Length: 117
Image (cartoon, rainbow, N blue to C red; front, top):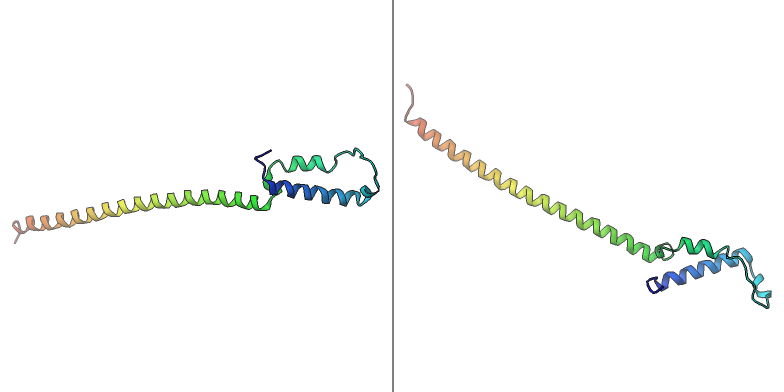
């Protein structure tokens, strides 16, 4: 399959060969003809390594980094949106403060003419 990374394929082949040698040792060296063995090591490896990140540690790390990058971008966007909302809230607060100061000054001017003795 052209989509499957070459480095992962070689990693799988190496692992399968290591497991085969571990299980059967060097008994293959005494054989003079092809022998059809049951693929006890190969079949589980084919199932296990359908996802190439299981075999290729670099690909797995890259995949994890990509997922983390996506989450980080979403978090940054959320923080920026919150910052914009906070800025708008501060502006409204300043406007309200200025309006209340103007109201206070107008009320004081209005009350000056009507002071009681």
